[in-house]
Each structure stands twice: as C-alpha cells, then as structure tokens.
Image (tube, rainbow, N blue to C red; front, side, top):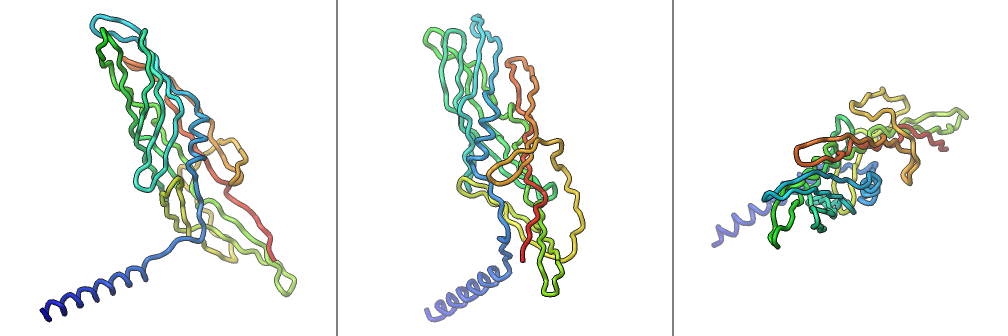
Length: 262
C-alpha cells in the first residue's frame, strides 16, 4: 500500500512538472487583436440579397414548374462548430411551403496569403410536391453550390503603422511597428486574429502578400477604412435548376496608419 502511494505521488509530481514546463514554453500572442463579429458577416450576407432557382419537373407523368427562394440567411459563429441558417420558400406547381435550412460553415486562416475564409460547406433542403396527399421527392437543393467562393477577409498582417517621437535634442525619431506572427481563434460570435508586434527605428522590408485583393471600392466602417470587392453574379445551368451563384467577396483593412506621439 505504501509502495502504491509512493508511485502515485511520483506520477503526480511528474505530471505537475510537465504541465508547468508546457505553460512556460507556450507563447502567448496578444499584442494586437483584430476581431470580425458575427453581425458584420451577416450584414455582408444580407447585402448579397435573395438567392433563387427555377426549372421544370416531372413526377408520375405530372409536369410542372418549381421555384425556390432563400430568405433570412444568417451565419452563426461558434467555437465548436459554426452554422448557416436560412428559410427556403418553395413553390411546386399548385403546392407551396417553407422549410428551415441548417448548414455547416468552415472558418480558416491562411497566414501565407493573410486571408480569413468563411465558407458555407453544406446546406441542403428537400424539393418535393404533393400528389394525392402523398409527398413525392423531386430532388435535394445544395445551397453550398451557390456559395462556391468563401467570404474572404484580409488578415491583420498588412496593418503597419509608424510613430514620430520628439527627442530631447529636438530631433524627430520615427518608430515603425508591424504585425509578425498571427493566430486565429474562433470564439462565441466572433473571429479573433491575434498578432505579435515588432517595433524598430528602421523601416521594415516590404513584403508582398499573395492573394491580396485588388481593384476594390473604398468604404468607411466602424473599424476604419476597408476595401470591398464588387459582388458579381453568373448564371449556372443544370438539368434541374437555374440560379446565380455568389462570387467571392473580399474585405481588406487599411494597410498603413500614421500616428504622431511625444
């Protein structure tokens, strides 16, 4: 029994030592944090507008035309799993109905391209009609096919700044600050990208980030000036439905801010 207690104490000591060593070597990145709120994402989603499709169908020798429209699209951002919600309004011949849709959303960050992606990966609802009070399946509508490109936000690595300081000898010294290592965390209703900041009295070498958005439209938001790519549409024809998928939407923060300090 005493031997068992000694072994148990020894294992507890080793576990406590390893836990302390792990915490000691864990780097906390919290110098600078950029947050994308769930409300911001849903404002962009609402600005896209209604998505709809229409085509002919034939079941049990009965021909007709169906039309569906997506209403109230929203994205719910959660640490464990994020989801897409909407209502599908369907009219199939003389029969119409509304069905709620729950889909999956993937959120990721590419540190090389400095881009945050919000991608609807799965969102399905059933298209059906009624014949002699019997439900007849026509097909499944995959809404993720109409959101082929993810919502893209430029990360904080381009947000550099510099400050002017008055020295005791009346000279002005300029200090340059830029983000270095960045890490993304998905939290409750928000996406947080934390960065380490580097400071120097000499300019940093310019780094060209691949995949940076171009030809954007400058807009002013609560977080500062951003660049939003124009939203386009294209027509996609299949054997069973016709609708306009949404092209890529990219939001970029400003790249340089200058602040004077003393």
